[in-house]
Length: 439
Ligand code: SAH
Image (cartoon, rainbow, N blue to C red; front, side, top):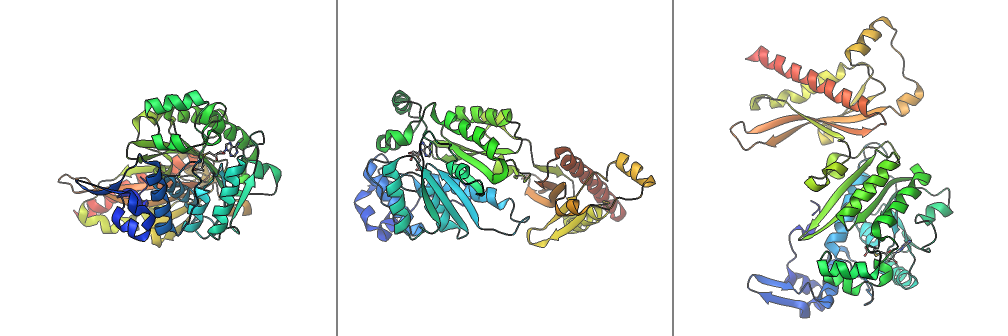
């Protein structure tokens, strides 16, 4: 589960029932304490209502013939999108954020949760199902969020990103989607038999919520194709995926389009696994903890690293001097602007071109230094951050020290990697030299 997800530890069901008495009849006792019957549909619904009521002040009307969204799982996806959005926090003023929720369902769960979590967010929430759309509209209204969540009716034949197609001036910060998973009724039945999904979700979902031609992979593939035409009018395109095999297909589609700026993540909740994918045509770069996962089965799908770490041996008594050493090395890079970001104990570096390699320095010796153009100052070719990371090793050495270089913005991967390796080398040399003077 996401580190900020409060449901990493299961709720105290008795306390929850005090806050939402309708849950009381669903509480069961067992040898280890109290819980609810997760296989019982009514209990699941009361639990979702209770958590939303107590923890998010959301009151939800869930029709019986539509999906009941489990809150911890939906929250995982929202928190990960928050991480994605925060990627650009340092680089831009925090603007109002507009998200597109594709297939919002009767609950409008994603927009409601997100708007409660973040007052700067607003949504356009689409669906093709009239019944779900009217429930979504009343859920939005009864929570007083009609000014921030626009419910948008579309059709299966229309482009998936219909609002962006209809209004060429519209810009969005992200799209999100929990797509219909299955390709047919038979596919649903096969999945129930293989216990791939919670039985409850399958029982209460209507066909329109669960089935789409070609299943989730072809739905999200359509998104990738459409996104190529919309490009940077939306900053981050994302979707959840319910099958691991769909990840292979979607990352394949992303790569076919030549999109190198993408990431994948995995949501684990008990025995249930879900995945999500993000891609972008912008030059903002995601950190590895947002865009890469450790699951060995998905290693071939992983995007290249944007977070590089170089272990550097430093005796414990010297760690206090490391920031000074890093700062001196960075100050010596010709043409780079360095900002000390005290709040996160890191330096932000803005550079336009390689001035640091041996070849570049040799060339520059004889040339008059270029003055960067106004455009280069406003939009430098490379923005990255550098900081020290200390991690416990568990052995006699105690602490391992590494220098971390995080790519934040830019199109040229080799410029970033070259810079990171140059600084790591210089810092290692400098650490060795300054220790040599003392010992
Ligand atoms: N977001 C909700 C519902 C997900 S179910 C949740 O996470 O609980 C998938 C939803 O997608 C259904 O409500 C279905 O009606 C909708 N849907 C199917 N095809 C669509 C399309 N082409 N455009 C928008 N929504 C669609």
